[in-house]
Length: 599
Image (tube, rainbow, N blue to C red; front, top):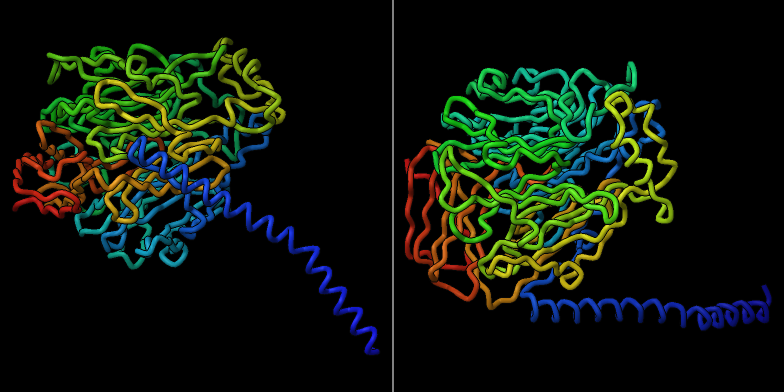
């Protein structure tokens, strides 16, 4: 190579660099502008609303994208609709290090679930493969629809129940070092097409029992259909869905299925469930939101359940129930129930329900009234997961709702054909081959999410766009947890065929808070079912430790209370599942308080 040739090459590289520099600078400038705008938005939101949510999944080391199931080819023409569930998220401190971890599900055959260990520095590491809970979506055994955690053997470590369209799975937590599959020893059924489950101690024996709600009938293999008559027989009163199961914990690693024996006998299409002592009887009741029908409220007398949805006012109007979340929205020490449904302008307005206990009713005579419209939380699109939580620590519970069903071609809508099916007779509705092909059309897709801020005076105001929630993914599960142990509730959202979103919450330091990490002794070790009432500055708010709530979700086991400007707490009253009542006084704010049930 001659000297002149070398010089030409050097000059060419130099001038190419000059040409590229403006583009590099332009991209760098755009990033800086975006960061600057995010900072300005956060400052504005903090000043106006007291908090800001920033999506940080990539920075936290989470780049999860959900894979949807691919079912029998006979369903190919409506595959996006029938395979529209499976994205879920559950919060658990599986290794007992005091930092919440995340378990998220995939739903395609051969896809892997992920267990993200909290690394204490704002990042997460997937350890599911190393610990044995990743490779769970296999041909012949079905795919994941969700997961709930509970310490069924009271050894101090949370165990994993996998909700599946297929073989249900129970994994024993080996003291945080791995998981051992114990489904066969536990005597679980061979197949349940389930979408919901919840851990709770229904009989008060100190052992966690397990409710599982079927969606499709348990005799249907969605990958090998004998025929296509596997859809609901009605859009309003369908009763041909999957069974509901109640597994009684025998204390020896085995469970006995007792649903019919204790009064839970239904084949409505269950999508969501949660358990709580709604009447102050000391016995947890069970609320089930059903698709294609009415909600069910099973009141527990300590031995049996009595389905009382209609008499209580929550089970008379058929809708498309897809969420159950409890919250003391008025700070009166009583739990209201939020159930999500469908709203589509000009087509279908079912509306979401906020069931609030009527004044003067209690015990077996409890009655609910729907205040969703009055309080501003009725219309939420094709709604799925929702959770209550005090996002700005002002002392009032807020509500986060995700929505969006099938986002495909923005310009073509499947609603007209879908409505024709909904209005058909049972023979048309019940046979998938009679449903019109979707052909890439959207069905309630690309919807805005809702972050409803509780004003403390009976109204909720949607501030989603202003506090940083702008995604239009097809949302499914929502969970809340203080992932950074920073005194604020962060929000995790699982999206169907989409990214897992992790919203880090920044709250104004002017507002204070208190957290509780409970451990049962006579009660179940997870303290599921324990109710905590915090009294401060003339106010009182009650929350309950849950074994699963929302849609395909489970929150941080720890309870989080906002206190507004108050730093003094008058009293904390804990009602343990065993019946013991514990009072704490002189409790300091701005801490996570560990409380062990007195023996």
